[in-house]
Image (cartoon, rainbow over all chains, first blue to last red):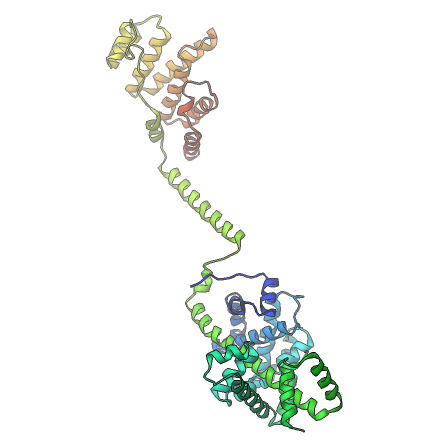
Length: 203
Length: 256
């Protein structure tokens, strides 16, 4: 095992916001907060698998909120992450209809965090749909689009890892892949609108 | 919605930040009056955000799998390597405290009067043995290690010298008669006080302290050893270290 890095809240936010060694930052979140949040879900009608799924989802939401500058460190990371995790789990319970008899309690139990963040959490189903749509793309398309838009690699760098004749051919392929994804996402106008809200809220 | 390929390509280049500032400005102006084009750009932004969302979810998922293995194996509980210097220092300090504590406990349970006595005691040698001149019968007997004779001669001597008194005390030590030895050492010290002399005074103090120790009276031995340790001019000063005093204190606490 390599060196395990420790972070102050401030340093962790900088690492996530600037996307510097973000893998270490994510591991730090798991090491320090997973156990506590696992207990919460398990004590509230959830299984370990539920807790793992919710935590994973909460980490993605947390990173996106930090990168959108929607969390500026007013509360501690622990408090904020716990609020996201708790509200995400209560949202999931509600979706499953298991919060029915305790609906009133459900609303009062929700962590009082920024309304926009609750709105962000509410868009989780739409975001989950992205997984389905992305998997409809071919592997080649996914690889090119992820390399360019997520990993921020240049076309030249991507060309070195893929089997295309030249940069222009790769560029054309990327364009087609992006258009294909756009069409998949907008095929259902209602879903497209929900997705826009879920992904771009607060930006 | 206008899906003209030309402006689609331009929109993608705008999205990718590949247009010049002038081209970007011209496009933004065009977008204000062309809602179809704006819708198309919004859709492309949606696609880009979806990719980023998917990429991040994939990354977290990959880390999630390894972290679940790590957490299940219980390795997070120990948090093996920490870069925080204060924490490292605290751990080192804690380890040292534990080691010192264990060492202290070991010392506490193994320390004894006899052990500390044996660390210090060496039989006193007379001047004769060291090769000097004339000796009395008692001194001669002592140099020949005839300790019973030394004691017998001493008891017959009406006015023993300090040296004879001291050698008799040493003879009593060899016979494990520490009470008598202590009485004689104390007599030498008291006489020196009365006469403002210091004949064999340091030797008497040192051996009296040892006698108390061997007689399992550390409470009486401790102040004498402390005095010797603190007096740099004392003949036996170098023999009584701080560590030896600490062990004596430990013995004292153990016995009280």
